[in-house]
Length: 308
Image (cartoon, rainbow, N blue to C red; front, side, top):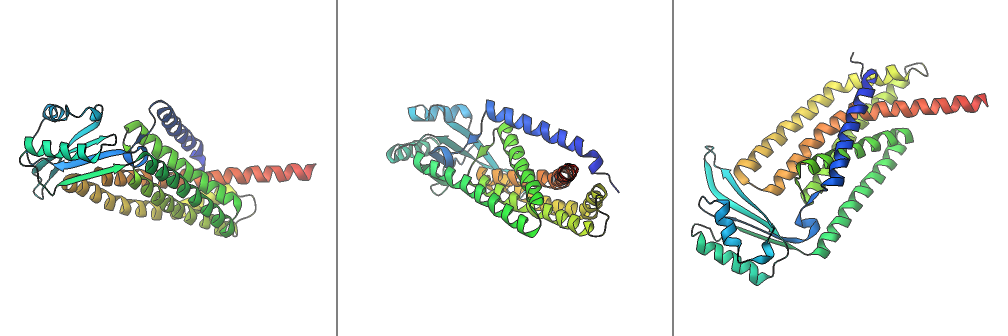
């Protein structure tokens, strides 16, 4: 039987390092918020030919409002693994419709292979971006409250505190990694975070339920052995579930990257993959040991009350 509880301080130290690095990155670099939250314009189209960044910059020179805009050349692959026509993504501030149309027409003149149907134009105003931010934060807050209420009703408040702390740990770590890598935060990312919430809490609740059942068959106070036994009993289930999920997500990431080339979907899958890794780790090394710490504190306070 693996002694998870004996190694909990090492796990706490690893989490502290990850959280500290994430917080430093968030404070220094912040999050790379997409236009869903900041407002702006995204243009994506298939150029139909190989191009260089210098050619793209030359084509964008007449458009002063796009100075400093994020420009990315993307390339997908066909079923044989061969490169397909190159595409272009431009992310910048809000552009009036006539300026967007002029830009598209200029690109069609410069790159005759550009298809008429391979165009994506999105514009989000600052007010809409602020509203999406508010709704995203509200969704997370409501999800946390609902989980606290359910876990407290189904188990006890200490289980709820340990579970929610582990979930917040997952969010901070994933946000920190996205900040360090400067990957774009968009609406699909929020959907991924909420999905990770549900995935992580399910894995954690299974272990918590096992702890509750094992406590009934052990003498009072033997909590370290109970938690260790409960984690080990569910270890293979947690690993197998995570591996199965990661295989599916890996296939999606491969497909999105090589055949579709959608950055929004790639961000969504990357967030899910990180969430599965961190969620599995926290359900084993953070949530259950943290409940044990809370139980020790509770027992210590009860002893002091009795002594007084």
